[in-house]
Image 1 (cartoon, rainbow, N blue to C red):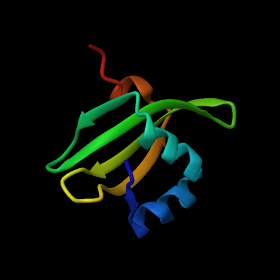
Image 2 (cartoon, rainbow, N blue to C red):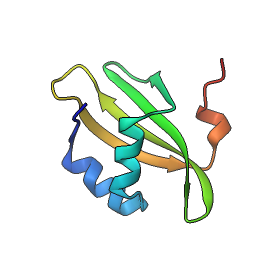
Image 3 (spheres, rainbow, N blue to C red):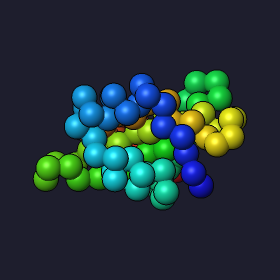
Image 4 (cartoon, one colour):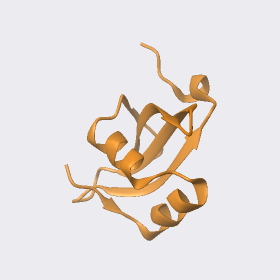
Length: 85
């Protein structure tokens, strides 16, 4: 599925050191999709960046066509966000 990147997310990816390839990989095959706020859902996957484990969280508005990526960030606090079932 094609996603449209907002200018905000492009700036945030650069500022936070998240490569576009990592965001695309999460969007193409997220390990989890969890509800967030309102129309926004979070696509997330555990990845390794510069030899360290992170959870990359990509916030997507799936209610528009094409879906719009509103922001993305990485966190080392994997257990805080990872959904166990």
